Length: 598
Image (cartoon, rainbow, N blue to C red; front, side, top):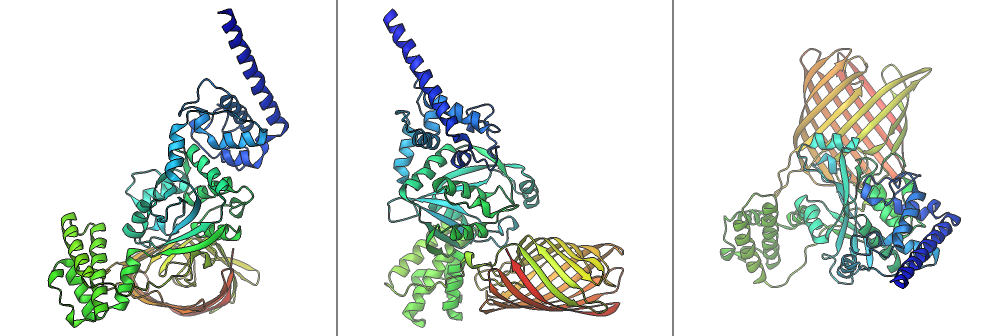
């Protein structure tokens, strides 16, 4: 018995010495100050952005990275508990890095849950995924990014998607936006099969998806996977503009390849399309792939079908015509194939939109596919490839232009943190979408400096009505301008809705837009607006917008705006415009200048 006690004491002494030596070595090498330890801690400075206490092994870990490293070493060298719930198994990324830096081994553990996940995932490569903007959801109008861990399987649908998002059951868009901006939600990483994310974005929300294969090595992929395991069920505060879905993908990529500095390219906000460009500029992107949404595919069928064919699609999908009795003799064999394929796609879309029951969907979908199979193979539908998001102009804009107004000729200087308006080139953007925050315009005329415009928020969703889709278009603005009487500043809030026709190259719209003005002369008006935009190609775009507003108290106002832009690259372009306002008196405003993006 005394002999066994002696053995235990010696073992504990050996453990203590070994641990203290490792901690001393870590201090000598200043590992807690190293870039990689800061990456593992999600700490841009000396404080971690992780807000979950369970992520830290030291009570001071969030604010004291050195204490967290010491505590990590003590737990990793403790052989008394190495089960799935132990720090030894919970933090494989920390363990692997410390073993490498300290040239040691912490031994083996019973980490069956982690081992099973790695075996199931079979990590081989990583893909950055960008679902485009959701045009009728302001909270999603910037798009989204997440990562996909690809296995050795040929199909990518069974790969695992790594996502970061706010956890909420909020149904009010305004409340979600308010709390999302101010950090009112916890954000969590999640891991689920890729086909589920595709179903959500590409099918349910009709968002086109771009995939960017990353050129990470297998060791770099495994480094990412080890850290993803550490972040399971760990929360941090979600902020819509900076600590958002895209920002947290940057941490994971830098963990995999610490020589890249993706986060250094961002300061006050992180917008998903800009993160795609950051991956490109860091040399991380290999091949690119485009997955069209169900809506995009159906629009491609519309472009390939005759009016009779379009009628047949609607009749087949609604059940008005039984597929078994579909008379395809009136159509060419290929059009008949397209009609049945489009009808099946439309039935599935209507089921996703909950417009038909599961029983109706199952019956119609099976009947349509059976009839289509009977026609044999044919041409595969050609879905036009859309411009890649990484080719879009950058999000922040500075504008410098010369203005010629009725009684003055100001030099106009503008700055807009984000993002895109209807008059700008749509390359890489969702056509018909506008989202602007804090669009500021200052006029300098001789020695006078005055505020010309400050839009707090300006949104638009101009979505054309088609044969298969009947969306409404809408637009809203809130901020200060000089459009009301006598060139004086007033605050306006305007919200309108209507309809649009056309396509990505040419569309026109009609909107009803009530507005409320406050300031030197408060007033309420009802406006009628008509407009059109043409994308000429070669990054040239024309936009015209005309309106007439009936005011309760002041004189009615008519307005016409015509703009022409040409963008020479994602970094800059030329813009000229004419604006005519008639209310009490007539004023013509001309502007010519440049837009610089960064």
